[in-house]
Image: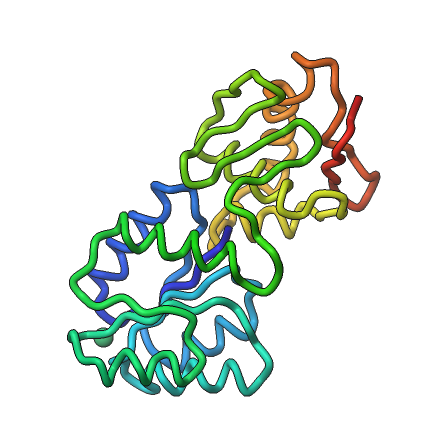
Length: 225
Ligand code: CA
């Protein structure tokens, strides 16, 4: 899942990025409001963390501009103080949630997970595709009754494929959602990770859930038997 963090305090932005990346999110940073709005409009983000006090264009305006343009990416706003007015205004401009500074990364991650669940379409807390099951909050995955151990990146890749189950996803989409926007390595890394993931979730079980759609990408099927 890819998150845009719009925050002008570099130190805090960097801390949020590291905190979210440790939880398997791909994170991009914008350091001012205008850049944040541009990135949010151009990129396909799953959630946005938006500070209110920003140079160029404040968070309220970024949020209302996005909503006016029909962009409904879930937004969590960072309020500087514990002011009720701040928080009410954040929600009124179309934000989905707010968090007052200082906050813990654990709470921020939990709030983002909650937003991803109730965002645009139904996002259940535990994902099931056939007998594959993944619990994003607990970082655990199972095939039937067997728990599967995955690296954070493999986990992220599986989560993305499961959220898009039955749909074809291209390598570019996978790169965009599982790796950083700034990733400039070899896109064939996706193939490598798909191969690793098959060794974890398919091959030991005699399955073929991750299907290669030639020249297009990959599709996760409920029954790869
Ligand atoms: Ca700020």
